[in-house]
Length: 154
Image (tube, rainbow, N blue to C red; front, side):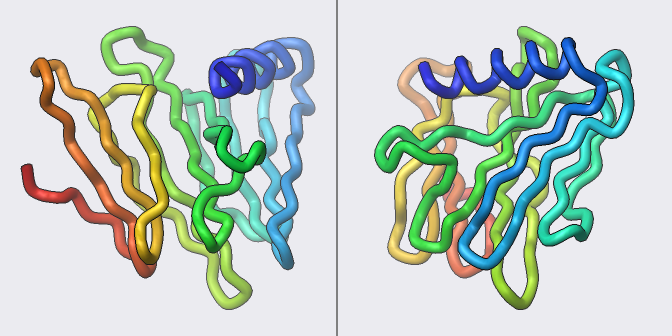
């Protein structure tokens, strides 16, 4: 429910202001999400310590809320999970992982099954994502460990 609320709040704030900016702090890093143009064109940029990590046109970006620790951070390295909302009902979202570090910040490619309701859990060295599919009782799983995103075989 908090994820939906966060997305709604981001959406409402974007409509009401063309100078939208959200800021999060991760230990020694500062993460900014900025709307670079008017809300009709949906051009966003995520900056980590002032350097561009992601610039995206035509999609709404938000961070997945972690209810287990009441924050936007996941795993032992304070990963941020970026939800890329497509705006469509047939394929509502994909995801990316922002992995902040003092030396290098990295951002994965988009992944997922179009579902906006993955089950996310900590793994030994990262995160596990289980996404529902259109097939009953079938899910697809991705793992992010040691800086590498991979889909686990079914």
